[in-house]
Structures are given as structure tokens and as C-alpha cells.
Amino acid sequence: HGEKNNVDIKALTARIAELEEDVGLWEQDKVAATKVRGMEAADFKATDADYAESLDALRQAITVLRKQDYDRAQASALLLQLQSRRLVPGPMKRAVTAFLQQPDERLLRGAPEANAYEFQSGGIVEMLEKLKDEFVKKKKKKKKKKKKKKKK
Image (tube, rainbow, N blue to C red):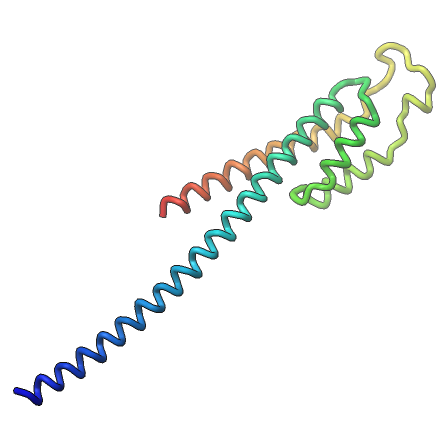
């Protein structure tokens, strides 16, 4: 009996050590997963704020540009702000740059007649509207994805 008990004790001691090692690894995994979740949360928060700021800039730019006799300086400032956002794709940034480099036709023609100024920024407004819609969809999708991940 004594020898069998010693064998059992050795086997159980080895199994306990094995399980303690597993628990140690699981604890390390838990710490690593918590760190990753923290980084993902910080990234989500930054991206969400960027979307919110970009959408605000888009809405303001669209509002200003839709006014036929828009304030060129204000529109330029809003478009420059929009252009600096990291979420705005390269082709959009180039289109904004091209638009901003166009001369103000009203200045070249002198004082315009009432309604004689043809609104030249319709194309840029349409592009801004599409970008705004895309950002709204992406922002909603990211929030939905985050909620789904949180439930796991």
C-alpha cells in the first residue's frame, strides 16, 4: 500500500504542477487580452471622435457651400479643416485642393448682378455629401461592431 500511495502522490503532484502551469498561462493570456481590449477601446474612441469631428466639418462646409453667395474665406477654412482629417481619403483631399485653387469668379467679373453668379461648387458639395453619408455608415458600423464585441 505504501509504495502505491507514493506513486499516487507523485502522479498527483505532477498533475497539480501541470494545472498550476496552465493557470499561470491563462492568467498571462488574461492580462494580454485585457491590454489588447484597452488598446482597441482607445483606438475606437479616437476613431469615433475623428468621425464626429469630420462629420461636423463636412456639415459646416456643405452648409456654407450651398449658399449661392458663399463666404469664400469661411468655405476655404472649413475645407482646409476637413482636408486635414485622417479619415478623408486621398482623392477627396486632392479634389478639395483643386477646388480651393480655383479663382473666385465673382472677383474676376466685378460686382455680380443678382443671381448672375453661377454656383460653381455643386460638384464639391455633392462629393462632400457622399463622403458624409459614407462616414455616417462607417461610424454606425464601428459602433455596432464594438457593441457586438462587448457582448462576447
